[in-house]
Amino acid sequence: MADPLMTRYRSPPQATMIERLRAAALDFRDRWRSAKPRRSGGLRHLEAAGVLLAVVAILIVGYNFDAAGVAWQRSLSTDLVRWFFEPVTRLGGSGYIFFLSGWIAIGAVVARGRGLSRVHDATLGLLAGRAAFVFGATALSGILSQLIKHLMGRARPSLFDVVGPYHFDVFSISARFASFPSGHTVTAFTVALALGWFMPRWRWPLLAVAALVGISRIAVGAHFPSDVLAGALLGIGSTLALRKAFAFRHIVFRPKGHGFVARCARPALQAVRRIPVGRG
Image (tube, rainbow, N blue to C red):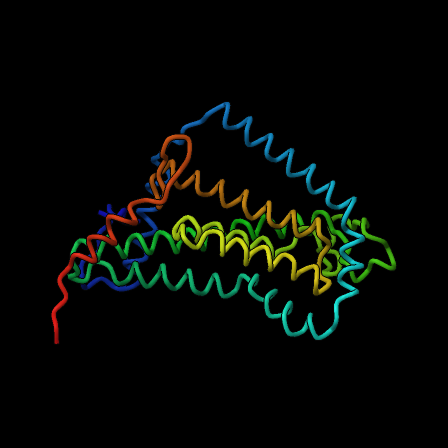
């Protein structure tokens, strides 16, 4: 049976949308508060080492490739940028991700408990939970990205001839000084990683698209290569952290061995496929 996101607060079939959403929120709150995540000193050390390696990698790429990235961008033809890289870069926008994942989660919650079978009800719960995770991961990584952007205040490549590749205006709120990290790349890798856990066969194609989004940010002159690498690592790191937090509470994911897996997708889908379908 699939793992429903909401189990404790069940709404009657005649419940309104607001009542169903409130029940879902209360159940999520209770699950989050009641769980006691396991802590591992070895895991914390591994995570700290990962952060250190990420910082070193960003510094190396910044020192060796940021100026070259600007030169490459300027060598591209205007038509190539307009017809290929500009459409690709729009895939990294977060607006449509919030819209789709939010409405899928809300729609699945509202549709539950209306006289459906337990299999259908559980499948809707699974869908709601996964959509909510994508929404939450995108929001978390996006907030972290904005905080770092305005804390660092790195000048964008458009100012390269004026201030060079390593100018920082700390605590700036100007969009011209919001190059580090690449927000579109953050979103692209966050969504690709999250969806890849739910659709393993699509994991590598999704990550390839995310990488292409990152390259497109350099091609359109919005970011340096180190901004893109930082965005990819931030998106991956924040999504991994959120998955761990969910898994320790058995929401959407669960611990398995030394890692985590998505909860009960295959049994639910197999159960749904076994439901006989009448012929018209």
